[in-house]
Length: 275
Ligand SMILES: NC(=O)c1ccc[n+]([C@@H]2O[C@H](COP(=O)([O-])OP(=O)(O)OC[C@H]3O[C@@H](n4cnc5c(N)ncnc54)[C@H](OP(=O)(O)O)[C@@H]3O)[C@@H](O)[C@H]2O)c1
View 1 (cartoon, protein in one colour):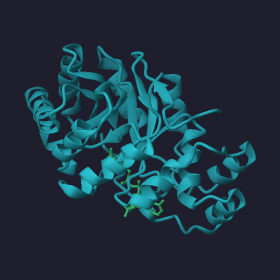
View 2 (view 1 turned 180 degrees about the horizontal axis):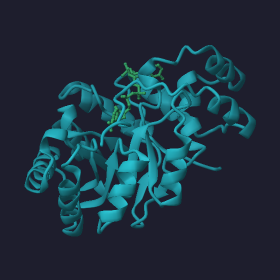
View 3 (view 1 turned 90 degrees about the vertical axis):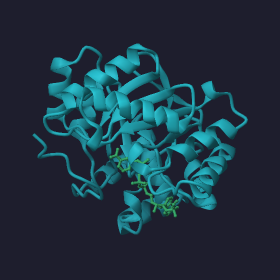
């Protein structure tokens, strides 16, 4: 597959989102987050992932506004936090995020977590802001197949994206295949396992064979599957390192070796038992 840093994935509403982006969880509001985005823009990143829960939307928005890029060339995702669920609350939260970001529109607005008993009403609010053109696409995060089935059975507008923890140590093949067959794009968060499996011996061996870092192999593993990937770094060298993943590809047999690293390991929350 021939990909470059500007390659996009087409969502089910025909909107295109760059397949590669920068995560910003724990990038501190202010200089740290602004610098990270500026460095990433210089390295060619076009897609930025934030959330109201990250408390850095102002900085993400500022860095986007300060960039020399046309707004249309960049893509910004933010998310509805758990305490903001419900129809009216979600509308208010969306407007707060838009105000904090201080950009004309949000590209992708996601429900951060499938909060029990409240997500249905929240989705209606997302449908409203989408219909009004205040965001280009709406989607979900941390939804299991059960949550997606429920949403698909009751929604007016289908989710475009499901952002979940996804890496070889948590190879959620069934969820990936379910999303694919329902025309929902999978987006990988914590693709680097928050650094917790970067020293895995088998991963290290494969990385050495490709003359790449373990982080680069994990990012490319997602790209090979047409999965959107948003590694986070606030460090200049690592932001650049993580973007150098478009001049090689992983052979099918090595993808299999990586898939076999699965141990259902989660470095974040597990939504499996959320009714
Ligand atoms: N929807 C959700 O519920 C959810 C949950 C988690 C994450 N996310 C999103 O996904 C993004 C990425 O996930 P994440 O932040 O959890 O974890 P991640 O991207 O898997 O890992 C980030 C960690 O790895 C380090 N790192 C980055 N590049 C590295 C490299 N090349 N070599 C070694 N270490 C490296 C970073 O430190 P430095 O910054 O010091 O480089 C940071 O500690 C988040 O930032 C957020 O935008 C969404």
